[in-house]
Amino acid sequence: MDNVYIAATATSPEIDFRFDQNLLSMKGESYPENAAAFYAPIVEQLRAYLATRQGAAVTANIALAYFNSSSTKMLFSIFDALDQSAEDGNGIEVNWYYDEEDETIFEFGEELKADFTSIVFNDRPITT
Image 1 (spheres, helix red, strand yellow):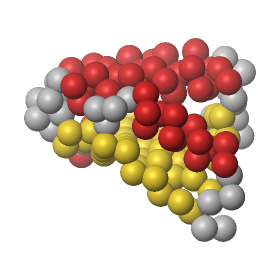
Image 2 (cartoon, one colour):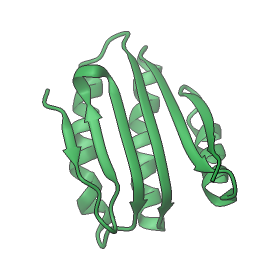
Image 3 (cartoon, helix red, strand yellow):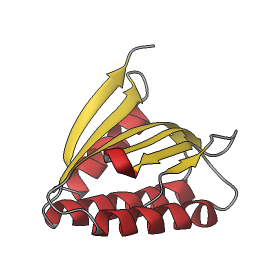
């Protein structure tokens, strides 16, 4: 399976899914005009990749400084795929990076941790 790289724009995050290394990264801001159109192929490729893993250790580094409500819905789709993969026997570890002073991003991470309990979730505060 080919790796996925999408450069960040002013309204969409950098996506760097290195499937050959079991390393998934997202960073930047996410408020594309059509979040479903932006994220749908990413979620599809992620699900296809995860379906090929058995007993793998997969790490996801998520560092989103801002995301809008439509991006939130798509992020839940990504985390749902990761959680299902963890339930299927893969070791899924998420490093959730957030600005120490940004309670909104921190609290969203806490919500993800509560909703997707099969994922090992690490809070990673960034000091600014």
